[in-house]
Length: 540
Image (tube, rainbow, N blue to C red):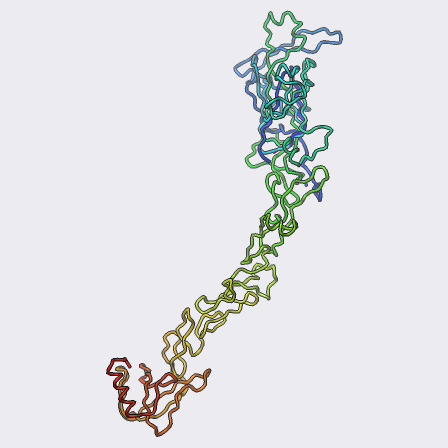
């Protein structure tokens, strides 16, 4: 996009014309102040398009008149030939955008006899135009008689014409050659912020089109009696130079521009080209610095103030080194009293508006700097063996990473059964049903150090496991004991007969007894009750 301020058009013969602009949406000089890239001719290095060109289908004759001399005497018309295919005779559209200093006597000329013509300049991006030499929203109408040509008075806005006015200032009969038509996009004596909404409406353009609507003959032509009789070819439009002064549109946040993506310069016309992609400052980004840079959205984006010079720089979000970008949030902005509205797009397993805390199931490593990428470590607590630490579902202490284990579960990460427990599961681990330790996976008792035992004499076997053969006579009874629980075996007094209902170690064929075993002094009546129960298939 370009800024357009003044348009200057040098023409052979004055004509009624309208100027339209097509609008497409919306730098060390930049240090702590508003800035703008240099102005230049936006037409340089770009293709100017017209509907016709003189001599397109072969050699044509064309004639023109000069201004009267000091004595108001008219000279004879000057006639010449044009041919678009011959360099020395051509007057192509590109002549309007070449250097007016190096090539002052080159011009574009339309085909003979055309009733109207259109000149169009397409820019590779959006620009601000500052000075228009010739200028499609209607901006200005030009005619020697506005009422007769357009139907509304000079200086007044026409109905349905987007507020454009008409002027006769540049449409007089003189000069016949090398006259100028000037359009200023902003009022000359009015103070207006070029980066404000009103100024932007007048300045931003992506395409410029000039419509030439009516021929205006030189007065000397009317005095030439031979002109009508000889049918001199004077019905054409011609323009020496199209000068569209402006700069790329950067909202006051850049002092330099580079070629926009896809821009293809015209060969041999790349010097002094005003390009359309801004090299943004003030922590802004985008082709036209129309947004804040990814990590600088703590305040809402604003254009710089062209009147006061305030840069309105984008402010960096406070993300504690854990984000590459942030986004602006109006709710956060209002809640902070319009001081801060940035919400960080957190990385490194962090969360919070400023990435100030670790995510759930991560903890802050006190040995690492707060801004280090690896400062938040995974809790690494086993999901089966650990209990939630907090109502938010975290499985470890976020300050140190300690895990809270389920009953019978141990290890730094709650990932195995403690000694004396087995069966790692979602309920924890179960106590071993052994005199000593047991296999943590199967629960099978593990032999090791000497185990407590009692020598007994079996008087009678009422019921037994078929895989463990118990016979009358001498036997060994192994009490199970747990260090953490003290003595857990039932009291067996020497010389006393007992009824014992315990369990057995099938692999080692041992008789086991613990606090869950049924141990009672023997009585005949007790024996009869037990036999009765066994007959009822209680699966003892």
